[in-house]
Image 1 (tube, rainbow, N blue to C red):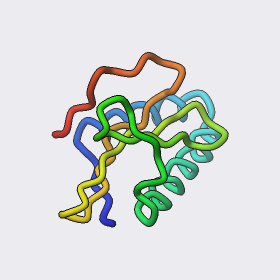
Image 2 (image 1 turned 30 degrees about the horizontal axis):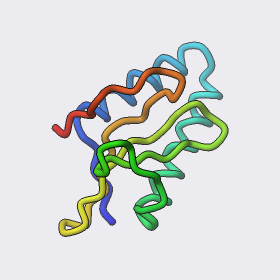
Image 3 (image 1 turned 180 degrees about the vertical axis):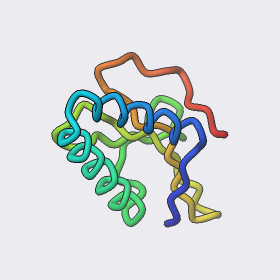
Image 4 (image 1 turned 90 degrees about the horizontal axis):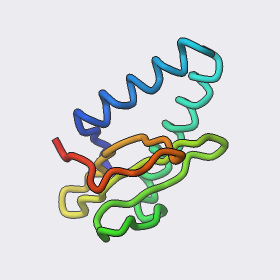
Length: 99
């Protein structure tokens, strides 16, 4: 599957990475590698994540981190849409924008 990021997911991930990097550059790189490894795996196994309440948005926890990847699978277009990389300790929004 082809991976596409929404604009809001890209912006949100950049802000998160920069926040972590300011405090601990090594940890930021380690978490970024885990995030990208999971996204790479999801491109091959897009149904590995579990559904959120909507039965459209899926989620997959990034190992050894508090982050969760919110994504959708567009099977006809063969696209995995990354909607957000979200801190699982925070309250989840009702929906993720698909810009």
